[in-house]
Image 1 (spheres, rainbow, N blue to C red):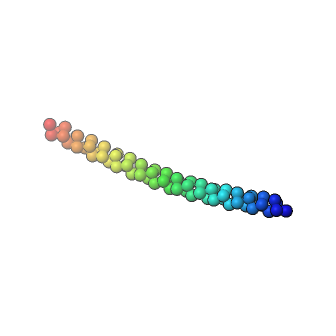
Image 2: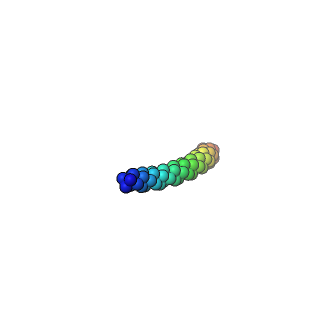
Image 3: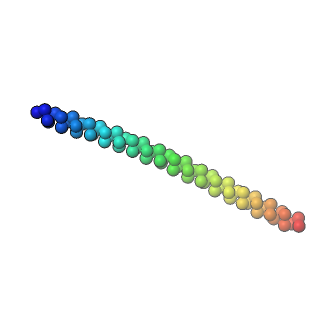
Length: 68
């Protein structure tokens, strides 16, 4: 009887630890998804900024060619 109670307590503790680990993993995945989304947004903004700078540079180069 005592062994059965101890085994049950042990299993209960294992389940609690497993549940805590799973919750931690879920939080980690959520955080990764947020960071990934933020990174994608930032990359898209940088790409748009770079395209604008390229257009401005090409325009300036054209002006400089006409001045020479």
